[in-house]
Length: 132
Image (spheres, rainbow, N blue to C red):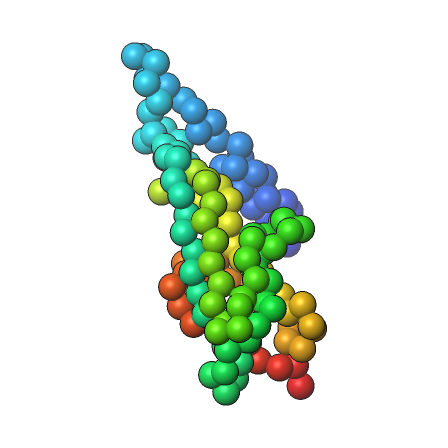
């Protein structure tokens, strides 16, 4: 019974994801109210952060990846600062098409990777804690 409910939930969410975000009204104008995401707009996402250790000291060589990408978008400098700009799309229901989720990786592997949303990290100081 529990597996059946789980399957029903998966089907429900898959159906939501399959909603056509490009439905149009009778004037052939996109009707954003009919889609899960809403209308998409072209935007430039500007991301900036400072990466620190548990003692509030800046960390250098921390790579920042957009989830699903293999090349870092930025690497922290000696002051711990890192930032990038990316052309993407934004919708009120689905947020950024690129870089909504970020992964922070230490090139020297002193700290475990950390995953955050762009909303949690943008303009913030991010603290990485050494693995014990």
